[in-house]
Length: 563
Image (cartoon, rainbow, N blue to C red; front, side, top):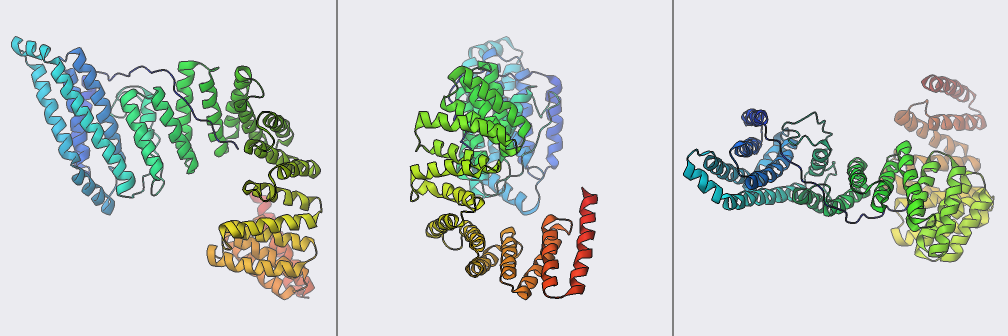
């Protein structure tokens, strides 16, 4: 599947406003008092600052000061969301977090901000004419003071986010979904979409030790939202990079939420037919494909295809990319005829525009060949695979997936000699690049063993399977899926060699493990039961064979009921 294309700049958004509500101020003051019981003392301090900001806004503030104060409120409220996410930790982790906060002087910084705000508030609330005149002519110095406080909070926030992600090497908890029901400490702006994305950025999904690139992008995005808003071109660029990084590390839920926000922003600012909006649709479709939400993926992939055809033309690179994504949706639904029609268009379009040896053309050729195989048209599959391999050459570093795919097709065509030759190339290539013990190498060895048996060479298969099984048990354990599959293959090889005792021993152990892991109503367990019945028959173990038949019938009845 092609990687989603990057987004570029777009128009500036509107600045959001903090409501001036006495009831909200009272609410924050109450929560501040209650937060005194929280295990992390800076939570109470954060709420105290929020309350003081609101009180100051409620004072007779000059318009310029009021806007600066709104910006400060947004910054402090966002920083507080970080505190809120850690308020329920206990024990050693709470101690570590407290130590970090003490080291960074977070509580002292917030207290300094609170004291300075209180001084400004008292100045603005003064009822004497002279003081109010001084307040008017002092609006700029007050504004500069407020902006200085905001920068202080932002700097502390950036250092805290970085320390949480890198210095303490701690696990960040799973992304929390926020239900926004109205104005209040959870959403003081009443702006659900903006608040949701802001909190999403502050709360990355659980990744264990956060990758440094993800932490950097997370910090950049949080800063861009604070500085420019969440619809600003610079913000959306960073958000797109952040979503892509989440996808690359397998955290698809936050990637989807961010990409949904990006799409909504472009639809609102540019309309549905804009190139940037269509790129956002394509990227969102890719994220839905990643989590197999195929109905939603189809909607956005179709919209991207239709929009790009109209805007760019059917053979444009971006149009073909969206077609490839839509074809993948159809393939995942086993709608292979529909997938094939799109994939043919993609292949010929890329070949004409990019050349036969371009990586994207090669990828399209391989995907089309895979679809032909699923349509039980291996001759057509082989044609496209061979064409791609001839273009690259067998020794080209990028030829490995084509060699693997072509070897499978040759096996389906009963051309076992060519399948063996290709699989030997793959195995030797992997041994040289990844080592004998790498899982991909071991899987390639198992695949070659199957071809040896297809060629009636079970002794060569047995040697390869025994060595592979030893490595798998050592590296992955007895219950790893690849280990169990290798045991199954080796048992079948012993059976083919008429070594029925060895086959029965392996199958009995395999049945115990499958039954424990998956239950006897699982198809893998029942496959082993069927094989054991035949093995027992050859060994003249009539009673064991009959018992296994009864056990298999019982398991089949159980699986029928469960369905």
